[in-house]
Length: 276
Image (cartoon, rainbow, N blue to C red; front, side, top):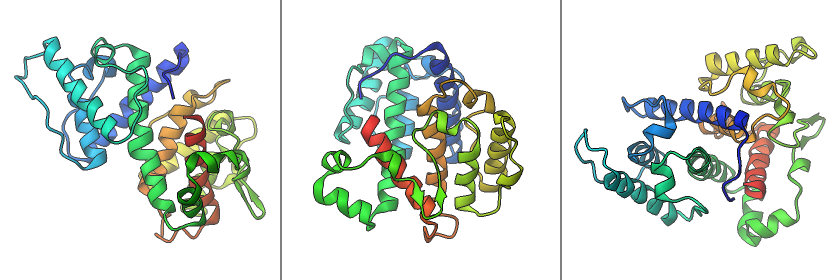
């Protein structure tokens, strides 16, 4: 995926989502570092390198320098180290270069962080979860690209009498119902979908986010007003939903016995491969 133009609204939401995601990831792994301004704080490459190390569980060697050292050559060197490492993982960094990261260009910085989340968290967790299933065997046998030619992601979310009714990771999630269904596939009965208020998206979203945080320990990366818009940001929603899969890759009991949950994993994997 090439870096795309972001509307002001998309940029604002992604900055918020990625800031929350980075801080949660750092905190969960014992780091005392926190970010408040991504565009400024990624310039020296250190945050990028720490996040990469956490997600890959591999050691990356970079130039620490003095705490006061913010000169451009050191920044370029560290960012280059991060990009080179990502390239060794097969991540294509189209239109992403060190200078643009060090200059804090929003579309480039956000595009890079999204690639890190997508490739080192979302896809890896999903592929590991689906190993040994029919989906995984089909992908390995004929390859991802050919497999996707034969499948429409929007048709993969039907489970007997239960239809998730997800065609995307944007408008389909706006009313909060899908978040509640996702929660209930992990731990049935946590959300009483019968009491969800019709045409009150923000109340539904608030309830789902609160329960996910309090009962399932899912970090709150987004707020209702971020989702209840004409065109919700797909990247931010995928990042948030990815936290459920990371926390519960095999469901709450470790067996992945809930068919709908398995189909949600499949849908996310296909959808991100197809469009991102």
